[in-house]
Length: 362
Ligand SMILES: Nc1ncnc2c1ncn2[C@@H]1O[C@H](COP(=O)(O)OP(=O)(O)OP(=O)(O)O)[C@@H](O)[C@H]1O
Ligand SMILES: [Mg+2]
Image 1 (spheres, rainbow, N blue to C red):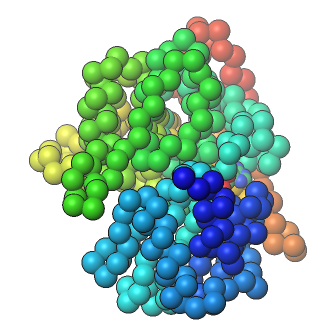
Image 2: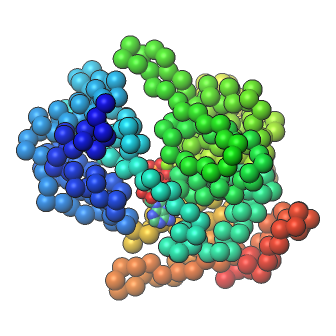
Image 3: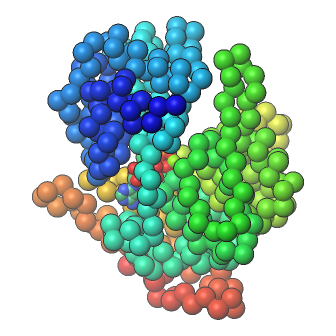
């Protein structure tokens, strides 16, 4: 087998420098003549181009081949992971109007640490302490946010707070998390082969995991019916589990979980489902990529349950935008929201000191 870089550069000569440049996080190809990259959260148009649409399409088809899949008239979309862990999504014409469209999310060997997030101004030490406390107290946590807002990075940080003496089962579509504890059992889903056989889904792996005596489940991302399996797992034990979901704010996160659970095809009345979500999920950590390109943990919210059929959420700690500097940078600060977490006392009993002052409205 080729070394990944050799192999990639063979088909992707025009973007080789970006594949090799660790400061580039994404490469976006919109047909042969337009290539954007993302650096430090900002998009830049590059001067590079592929020599022709057939050359670009051939590159995409070869990526598909290399992972044992097809990209053709009949299968015009490809979701793949390269051997180095980078994620590729490609769509070919006529579905893609610009010519072949490819997005490459580069695999970052180094996962961000909480110290780095603090240095970047993505969270404060107080916010980090609150997150640590939620993990140590076995709260079930969901990291929500838009595409590329930093959910997986934050999930990785959350999981790093899990004590070393617990058995952690990790389930992912493509392995991105890097847990450092001793007792980790990791699983990865499998796409169906060319004939549509052999698929293993997150749902299947949750079922297996529950028979493998997990203390905690860490699930890369909830996108569909597996939400229901996760809710049922959480409501029957396994406290302290965590996952991510695509959502616009903490409230929306809970609705998204409902919607995904409904995709399971299992008939369950909405009121019952809502009760399951409210009791399964304890804390939502919401991430965002702001207009200046910075990524932040913009809210840490506690789910208090249901009242008159509506979710009750308390923001505990949040980033408040004050304005935009002339250079286009967002200014603001992290502060409490005037509500104490319900687990303040429990934290004290466990020997974790949380300064109540950080929750005062700022
Ligand atoms: N706080 C941060 N500061 C700077 N860069 C960050 C931060 N968080 C994440 N990143 C970078 O942003 C990119 C996207 O992060 P990540 O994969 O965690 O996002 P995501 O929300 O999980 O994306 P997706 O929706 O595709 O799953 C990565 O290159 C990551 O290294
Ligand atoms: Mg992710």
